[in-house]
Image (cartoon, rainbow, N blue to C red; front, side):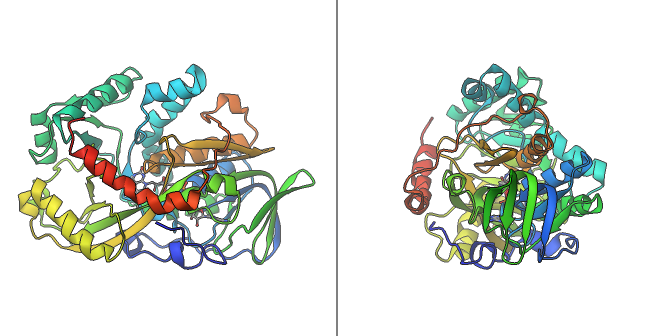
Length: 439
Ligand SMILES: Cc1cc2nc3c(=O)[nH]c(=O)nc-3n(C[C@H](O)[C@H](O)[C@H](O)COP(=O)(O)OP(=O)(O)OC[C@H]3O[C@@H](n4cnc5c(N)ncnc54)[C@H](O)[C@@H]3O)c2cc1C
């Protein structure tokens, strides 16, 4: 997918209001304005998604004055468009991979952050009383070939060694849990689950604002510079000066820090929600209401909503006529797995940009004195970004970063990034080939 930017970041293009179930059902956001002044802050936070809003919340709780700049509306990036699966693992790297990459201290600290990230999200929702249809029902990764059970075994062994609430599931158990004989086994992490993601975005923002954070929408940071040992961001009509900086722009980054923006390749992922289904059908498909994402590279995933819609989706090589083609493709997949879903209709289809890295590791950075940020969720960022927002807030508030779960690396911008964005979707061909193999 080619990058679509606008002369003013945040308006139109990739920031268009999506035709999503979440836009239709999330409680309204708090009333927020555009920055039209020069303001001072302890911490400047760029990005109004989970990362930025979690950081803002933790900053006010630590007694700091954050100012959040959001280029568009809150949640117009990935945070308001995702499947809402709260998953306490990364896409590819397993705990031992993280330790091998970041070392025994920083690596294990980051592994613990990922392990606890789903529980931390649900605990935060409960602690603050955020209305976001949160269900901590568990997360299941079923194996679509017998060979991929070794992925389940490896993950259960590595997470189990670190006291995560995980269990290996044999074929019969997966059949009972999911209501389909399509899979060969798998594993469950009981701390996972699902939320209405846009409701969580708006809820985090409301709580942060109530506690004293300043959040501005339609206020893109057009430039960020160091001036008199402070951070200064310019917006179309205002300016923020702050002691510390947090960058939470991920796959929707525009304008600032091009070396961070170009180290990820945004890939389009499509989401879709069925019409509400009858309770008789609902009880036969994932009756325990866990979230599910399987081992396909061309991922199959789904979760229930409170009003009995299945929220699922897929990927396309070419996005032309995406909604109609996906209704046919994903509808057929659902019917293959659950014959009782044949002919199911979809009320909403939308998409969003997932920030991919070439090795599937997220990137956490120091951006300068008291400046911190991250990018590269690789599609597993709901739980991760809430916890990373907390850690970035602690760093910006002055905590010793050696005590925090922030595995810093140097930015690694990808040469020919815009070309990679165009050819990135072709990776789907490789995924589909691998998916059909016994690996
Ligand atoms: C379609 C889709 C499905 C997904 N499904 C799941 C899932 O089920 N489970 C899961 O764990 N993960 C999922 N993810 C990943 C997850 O949504 C992201 O990792 C997470 O939302 C990232 O949050 P963030 O706050 O870091 O970034 P974002 O939510 O993308 O927020 C970045 C914000 O920065 C703003 N911004 C950019 N530039 C500027 C600027 N110059 N000035 C001011 N603001 C700026 C943008 O407008 C945007 O609002 C999915 C992602 C997508 C796209």
